[in-house]
Amino acid sequence: MAKEIGGFIKLQVKGGQANPAPPVGPALGAKGVNIMEFCKRFNAETQDKQGKVLPVVITVFKDKSFSFVIKTPPAAVQLLEAAKLKKGSGVPNRDKVGTVSWEDCIKIAEDKMADLNAFTVEAGAMMIAGTARSMGLNVKGNPNVSE
Image (tube, rainbow, N blue to C red):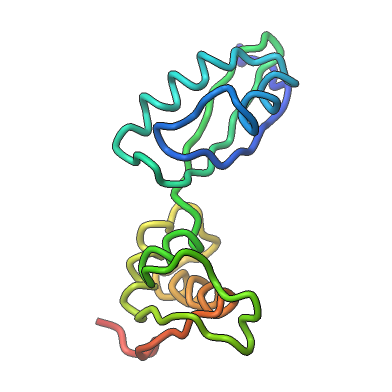
């Protein structure tokens, strides 16, 4: 028989750096989850992604046990890495702060394909390009040419 689900917690935590401080501690403590056990398990699973922001969905069961799923880093974070920037534009429709190539969008879409709401990599890359434009980044390259 499956365990009864008590709730879900969605967090964004840096890989290998989960600790009981906010936002992790208060979010887990409110649901009665063992905070240190989560931190140890999360840090062990994300050693290879040290310092990258990773979304995690924690399923909390009625008996206070839990399981979690680690997702791929957000598209915005990956776009900033590709453009070598610290942050996007405050006024993205007027001030462009950087450029990413269409190839960068395809690479990010391939990486995030499991988390995207798209059937093809090209459609996913179009979504990533839209995110880039909303951050004040120009997208260089031709999306109509498939390799």
